[in-house]
View (tube, rainbow, N blue to C red):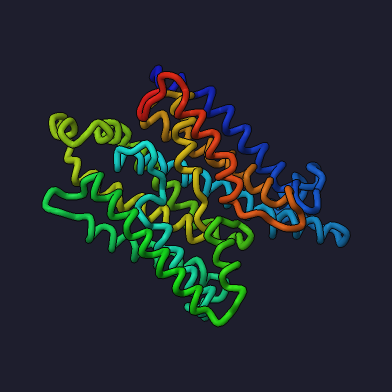
Length: 347
């Protein structure tokens, strides 16, 4: 075992334990609190096919059919946003970048708005919103790529400027769709989705998002050294034998697809991909392999507890996740940026 691996063992072990505890406690907490022993019992029976007594049906349904998929999806989305945040910051060499800077979430929002306002893809039932959001994200990805591409390839500045400009265009389209809506409640529904929500989480929401996040983590970890070099600039990359344009192209595609998958199941949740990578760098250092190893667990724990707060703070009403992540993320980001000696890529 290398020195780098040994130095990460403790934080990874601690975060893994914290995540498991957070998932169980997150399932227990809500408008109706379920005792922890009952939660563990119901989860065990669900996994092993145990028998549920008639007086346990209500509690079992809350734990297994409602809260378990929601809490697990929160963990997956938090992990994914954190990892993609690390990748995007290396991709565009910008400390203020997050998974939504490339306009992908705005494209997804147009697709989701079309479903809410006009019933597009209504034949798909509960999958209509996720499908339309993902297709909108892919459409935005293609448009950003085609627009940002030049003779020099995908340069960081062109990517950022193109993503920001097209994001405004997508938001304008979304506003027009809401304005033309025959249903007065559409604006409220769209706004709630745009700020992030896991209220529609089901077991069918998990597999695709989970696979996307796992693939992203594995691929990015295998290319940690390349990300280190890419963040130093194209000239440095070329001098060390890395094709920055080719690397940026596949990195853009990977982050766009994973962001689209996550936005499709949770809406646009801000600040997770912006703040968590910086916090992790302060703890484990700036090497991308180290940051990518820890960020998924940190992001998963963070969003699980954000979701708990969203469900319980004003119960039985539910707060959008983006409101809570912003209230937490803004002061944390300010503190991180004001920390003496901190700079992007180093703690």
